[in-house]
Amino acid sequence: MKHLSTIGLTVASFLSIAIALAGESTALDPKTPVVPSAAQSRLMLSGWLEAGITGNFASPNDRQNFGRLFDDRSNEPLLNQFVVTAERMLDPKASDRFDWGFKAQFLYGSDARYLHSAGLLDLTTNDAVQPDIPEVWLLAHFPITGTATGLDLKVGKFGTCIGAEMSDPHLNPFYSHSYIYNFGAPFNATGVLATLHANTWLDTYVGLTRGVNVTSDDPNDSVSFYGGVGINCCDGRVCCVAMTHAGPENAHDNHDYRYLSAITLTWRQPTSSLPSPT
Image 1 (cartoon, rainbow, N blue to C red):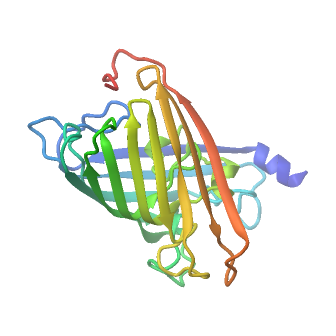
Image 2 (image 1 turned 180 degrees about the vertical axis):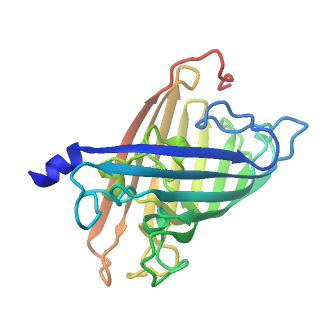
Image 3 (image 1 turned 90 degrees about the horizontal axis):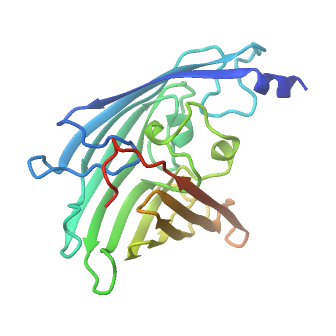
């Protein structure tokens, strides 16, 4: 009962600041992809700062909020994320020709302890604030006749899209995270992911990864499957994404598979201030 009351009395507040380091942002909604105008460069440098404190009226002696990862320290201010990102976005008008892009992201903060992937910046420190590289990937777009906008091929380390929450705080409604995000979803993957834009309402995702939160140090040296489907309708206001990650995750065991799956339904209320999804 003490643990339950601790969770029930845990409240959170946060400060999240987005810093545009190169040009004026064109996205009014953080979930809306940034589409550069003709006068803007597709090469962008951006970043954000997130800090917060989680109040716990139970005041546990070990300062740990039971059942929490990212907001794990009770009554203690934390620098969650200081992030700098360099990226080159795909040209939204290049659906009928080859195009390429990339993303490289550096993170320093308390979230790095849990977003960390095995084999990259492996540290022996127990410091609350650590560095990490959440994403570093190349993206190539190939036009394919008979599809809506062709095929996107991503290679490198990238964030997974399993569940409704992401490591990027701009994409989450709350400062704290759900239990399933803390313990039931992979934060990142290293491998290759192909996204086929089959038509205007259907996307399919197929990829191979090194495993759950693994970059190079895979304890079983086996690949895992990562993929699913995305369906959207109502001019992009309603979207349903079903994703799964399946593969052996136990050390020195290539037979027992672990399956992490989620179906996420998103509905966005039409707002006159938002740009049209088309």
